[in-house]
Length: 109
Image 1 (cartoon, rainbow, N blue to C red):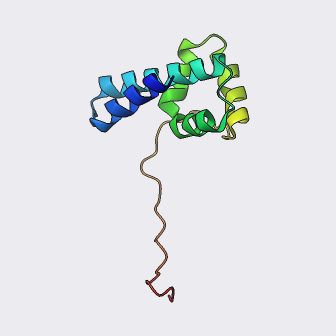
Image 2: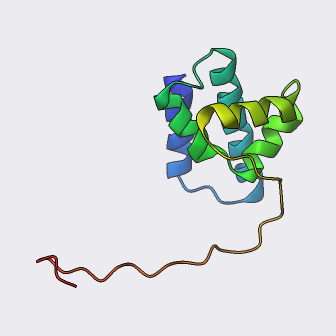
């Protein structure tokens, strides 16, 4: 599992952004998540944090499409790793950003 994780991160670091590469990355992450679940590792903190970080709409869709009983497994898995399950929706643009607090080195604002 560590080798697969490292290959995924290595590939991400290369910065592939075309649609084919992004779909392949989502499939790879979905496979990793399925393997972690099958091996009873998904609930362990090290794996749960990775699963939460990787569980976006594209990865979810690949998991649902290519895993036996994918929708039910995904929902149950998200509960176990502590991520709320939201209905799949098309992206609506960037999330609004909040301004950073104004802090100085001495801690006064």
